[in-house]
Image 1 (cartoon, helix red, strand yellow):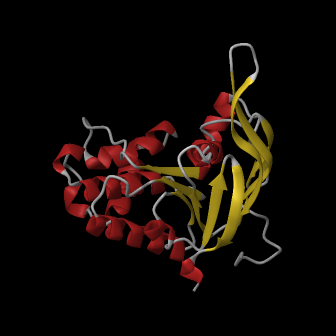
Image 2 (image 1 turned 60 degrees about the vertical axis):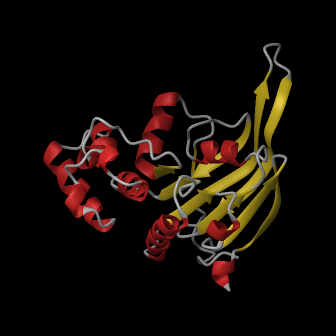
Length: 240
């Protein structure tokens, strides 16, 4: 199932991760994720699938350090990040993880280049270096001629490519994609998926949440969730 050598530690390791949402009296209202164990090696392309309510969005938020588990341990590059404070978690998130969302989440008042620069701004990177790296990412996603446009002047597919460039500009260890083609037509979706395929072929670790079997075929491994548990964990059809 894993292509990496046994000597390489997993980039992500979850041990008995549980996430409960509590009522005001402290009792469990919903157990969204139930004692999940999961390992992901560097360079893998993993698709997380499941019906609405299966726990995949909660799991993605935990993987992205946007949420903490109620119990369990989450090792990201051998660092247990499950119980880090907000500031430390924010530093890890900014350094290790790039996010691509279904709704793009671009800032409409900023130009395309300025949007790509945002993660570097928060990391204190000098303006000149920010701009150079953003321009390089823009070229990487094939939008060199759109740098001074606003997001509203771009098509949906172009906006998602900008979002991918923004996610990559900090050179994160992991790219998390949450339904990245959910708002796109099929032709544009194919373009975005081809870009993700290329990034994985270059060695980038990708974890994608999707409900779409066609999208999941791009993954080299498919993890299916059901009622907060891992129902199956199999090689994807990209292996075939």
